[in-house]
Amino acid sequence: MRAWLKNAWSYRKQFISLLVGVPCYETYVEHMKEKHPGEPIKSRKEFFCEFLEERYNAKGGNISRCC
Image (tube, rainbow, N blue to C red; front, side, top):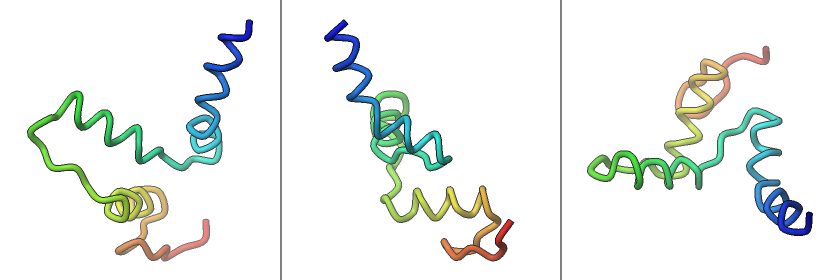
């Protein structure tokens, strides 16, 4: 039980991020290193700007609508 709680606690940041709909940059970097080693990894700013653009139709990280 203790090992399970320790493991669950280690995923708390990722869980909370997914709960509110924000992707985890660290998970993205790990995925790119493991699955796409030859491709460039976006910076944290580029990653979140792309996320905002996809989710909120943002332009360069600036949200252009509220809903």
